[in-house]
Length: 189
Image 1 (tube, rainbow, N blue to C red):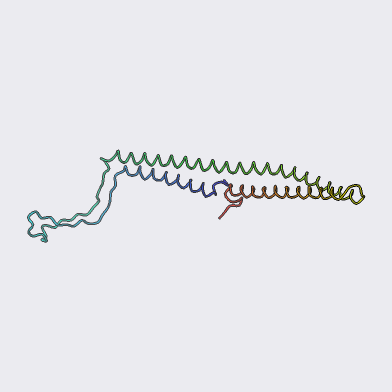
Image 2: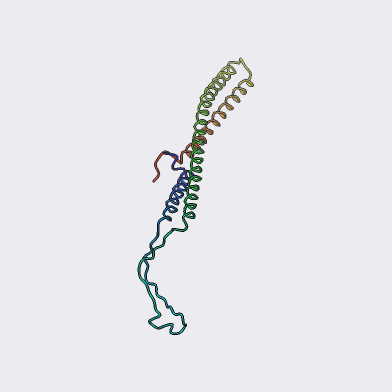
């Protein structure tokens, strides 16, 4: 989809993925954890004398299980919070996508309107140039004054300017459409 290349949509999509992953992390916290550690070495003495003698030395090697029995409500609230974050990220994603579709639709409608305006302005420009040619011909034959020729030239130039302005607006709308689509038609690598 062309819109997936838009940075705002890609960012919103990553937020949804991160929120979804945090639910998995929160659910994984329900399971007991076992750490396989090295040795624990220490000293034990109740009398205070002979601290560093061999009988007071203790050590252990092996797994250290950690059970999550007493904090189930805490873990469940973390899962619920992660789900709420996912819901919020999903709503943000939907809003960004809808905004992108709206921008593309607006630019397409603008291009369609400008295309119709260009067709009409082109016809008006052609008519203005025909009127200018006719005024020049009539002036050369002495039928009108030069004021009529000057007026026809002014109308033709204004029609040309109007047509150029519409074409410029059409180009700006095309750029807006390309931006709205995420930068272009070709697949970026």
